[in-house]
Image 1 (cartoon, rainbow, N blue to C red):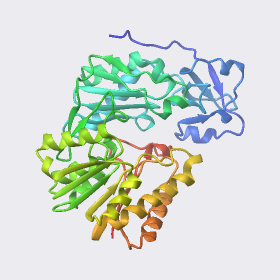
Image 2 (image 1 turned 60 degrees about the horizontal axis):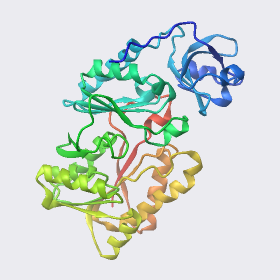
Image 3 (image 1 turned 30 degrees about the vertical axis):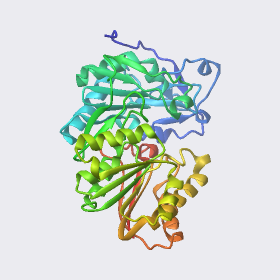
Image 4 (image 1 turned 90 degrees about the vertical axis):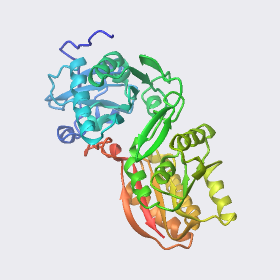
Amino acid sequence: MTAPFSVSHPLPTVRLRPKANARAIRHGAPWVYANELVVDRRTKNLSPGTLAVLEDEARQPLGVVTVNPASKIIARMMDQDPKAEIDTAWIARRLQRALALRERLYDAPYYRLIHAEGDGLPGVIIDRFGDTCVIQPNAAWSDAMIGPLTQALVDATGCSNVLKNAGGRTRSLEGLDDQSGVLEGVAPDGPVQVPMNGAIYMADLTGGQKTGLFYDQRPNHAFAANLAGGARVLDVFSHVGGFALASVAAGAASALCVDGSAPALQLAAKGAEAMGVSDKVETRQGDAFDTLAELAGEGAQFDVVICDPPAFAPAKPALEAGLRAYERIARLAAPLVAEGGILGLCSCSHAADLTQFRTASVRGIGRAGRRAQLIHSGFAGPDHPQLPQLAETGYLKSLFFHL
């Protein structure tokens, strides 16, 4: 066990520039950008992840922040009490509050336990898979305090195994390494079975995408599955069979999973096998855009088509190209939907808001010569709570159209 972590006051101070929006910070905005802070030599020399007291231009304290001079997000609010002690006990309280919410929401320990700022632990993602938790410490402070964070997590949940996932773009933006590993216990020796929406998913916790499974789509999987009784389903960017397996569990006649990753499709097939529905689930490896065009050339038709691509617009510089990609996906997918069928389109892009994504999707459907009714807009599940002051915590959008 790691020794308890504690911080001795007084902490160093950092100060907002005169034109920075201190009111927003007081009202819950959690981030301070580098151009909003007085970055003198002393601040530049702070180690990434250092705790400090944030002051406004009049030197009035706003709270305890964690500072990373190497990041554009130079300070993240930890606690609006400037006298807060950010120690193992503080982390444990945040974890216990998050755990209490999840235990009200779900009857099995498979969920996102910590959704970064949405759960008051800036930059930290923790997904739970039964007796194993996977941490993505995407902010410098959580890397520096990984010991106490792990200890508090074990104490709160009773989990035997804790893994660190250091992949992804966010850590590189913080100047952090990409070294994953085992923090507590052992890594599973194979894929972990995850029951969700009546399906069984196979999650690769050490070599898969992100933490191994996308819990955020749980309610959208359920919505699509509710429409899939007796249907022919096409699940594009399927990963481990998210929409396909939920739909087959709900009575779909068949499902085709399309993805560029052979290992992901193998996990989808193993999930279908675990469910006893291998005869209803097929996989097809290939580029999604190319495969959609190929299916159209083959005259294929489906009653439910879902496209859940990776983030085409992860940041503002990629927005225009990303919106064009979403439009193209809609244009290629719409002809594959049988008359009266359902088209589901998803975006996990931070930079594209709901209106922009909807506009691109409708344009693509129109360019395909189809007429659409928007019947449902979906978002991430309640284990991905949004911080109202931070739009980035509400990144997922799903649109369901009746064609």
